[in-house]
Length: 508
Image 1 (cartoon, rainbow, N blue to C red):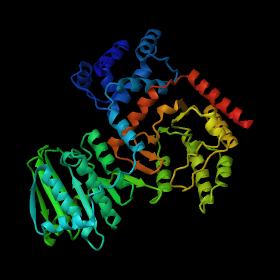
Image 2: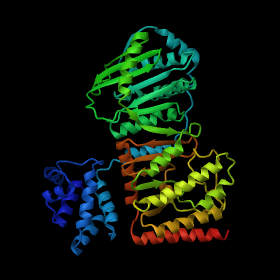
Image 3: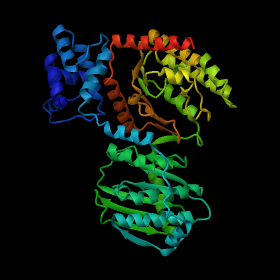
Image 4: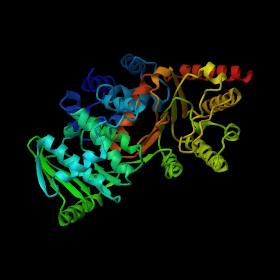
C-alpha cells in the first residue's frame, strides 16, 4: 500500500479533513491534499510524518477506529499513545524508507578487511611516473582524471618531508569506482602517502544521494582506519549543476577540474606544479573550508582521541535512543560487575574507567526519566556464557584488552537489566536471533547523531552528527524495531527469558 493510500485511509477512519490535519501539524492544506492524492511523496526525513502519526494516535478513540487501525497495522494496539505513535510512524515509513543503502554500508563495514597492496606498486615506478611530466598538463575525461591523480599522488610520495593534502570533489565519482584495478591502486597510493607522514583534509558533498554518500565513505574506509584523515562537509545545499574538483598537496601539485551535471567524460583536468598557482588555489580552498563543519569524528585503538568525552557529550544530549549491538551494553552494567571485570584488566586507566562508568550509569538512569532507550541484542547463548566466551561490550577505545564475563557476572548484569525493565517503562529490550545482528554496533539518538562501531579487528568507530546521515540511520533502526513485537505481553516474555538465563547462570 502506497503512502498516499495509507494517509487517505486513516484520514477517512478518523474523519479528518485536509484543513484539520494541516492545522494540527502546521503544514499547508495544499500539501496534505497532494500527499493524499499521491501527487507528492514525502522524503523519509520529513518531521511532519511523525507529527501526523501523533495526531492519528490521539484521535483513534472509538472501538470502530481502533479495530480498523488494528487491521491496518496487523498488530495489537498499545494503550500508550507514544507507543501507538511509533507504530503508525513506522507503518507510514515502510514504503518510503530507503534503508538498503544503510544496510549495505553496515554489511561492508562488518566484513571489511584490508586488501593486499597491488604487486605492481613500487617506489621506482612511482618515481618514473612523477618525473614523466614536470610541468603543467591537461588530462581529459575520466581516464585523464585517473592519470592526473596517479601523477599527483606519485609526486607526494616522492617528497622528502610530509605535507598536507586538501581534497574536494563534487563531480561524479565513477572515475574512482568504475575501474576496480584503479580503485585498488588509488587506495594503495594513499596508504603510501599516509605512511610517509602526510595528513589529509577532505570536504565531502552531502547533497549527493545517500547511496553515493555512503559508498564514498565505504571507499575511504581503509584510509579512515589510519586516523590520518579529517572529513568535513559544507552544511548548505547547492544546486549541483556546476561541479568542481580540487586536489591540493601543499608546495607540491594541484589537480583541478569542473563539469556541468554528470558530464565528466569530456572534462579537462588541469595538473599544476607551479608554486604560485598552488598558493592561489590553496587560498581558494581555505576560504571554502572555513564555511565547513566536521562530517564525523573517527576513532581507532591506535588513535583513540578524546572518545570518552565525545561519548559523554552524545549521551548528555536529550532524546530517544536505540542501540543495536551483539552484546548488552555496558551502559546497563551495575557498578559491582564493572568493578569485578576491571579487576582483570591490566590497565593503568582502571580507576579512571570505573569513575567514568559510574557517571555514565547516573546519566543513563536520569535520561530514562524522560526519554526512551531501546536495546536490540541477540538472545543470550548459555553455552557461550558458560564457556567464558561472552565478550564485555566496553568501547574498544577504553582498553586494548579483550575482556570476558564470568557466568556470575553475566547473571548479575542480566538481573540488573530486569530491574531496569520493571522500574522504567522507557527502557526496552528486544531480543532477536543472533543472525539478525550484523556484527556492528549502531547507537542512534533522535535528531542528535549516531555512533557506529566495528569492534572486531580492524576496529573503528564513527561519531556522526550530519542531519541527513543521522536521519537515515535512525530510520534504519526504527524499521528494525517495527519488525519486532512491542506489546506488553512481549515485554513480559522478554523479562521471563532474561530471568531464566540469569537464574541458570547463578548455579554455575
